[in-house]
Length: 222
Image (tube, rainbow, N blue to C red; front, side, top):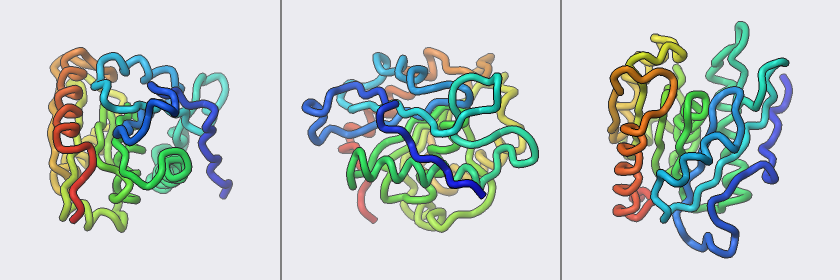
């Protein structure tokens, strides 16, 4: 089994230079399959400016001729393998420890990035304050952090389109069972929306993030 490559800190877009970050809460943006760090950075103007936002590039290269980067393979028999998603989450956590430090961060992921966001929360509940999952899902199986999450119930926003045919139905079903049991869940299904993000959804995400800021941006120890 090959080693999962680390994230490249030179391929990260920050919303603020180091001297302006201070103790502001950090929100990481995790793009989807075949995309890169420039994609979700376009959401920055729509999100609360009190956050320092960092859009990171996934470490894997999809098979040619697919462009961009990926967090884990989705082709072939190993597609969407929970073990590969956990490996991606562990790599993200290593980057967080090195580049952000010990304080919890918020995660906002789209599609594959959303799956990694949920898995990162499950691998280390102490490292993630809250999660925004857009057109993503929770992987099947159990992780050691699940019991902690079931007790703490951290805030999670899950948004998806009613016409999204990219995420398999069985994974939507797994997510619909797992998230309410392990988080304080909010969000909705957006009528007519495909595998994308709408302005209505962005408005809801902004309200969710503003609520996190009002709470202090970090979870209560418990």
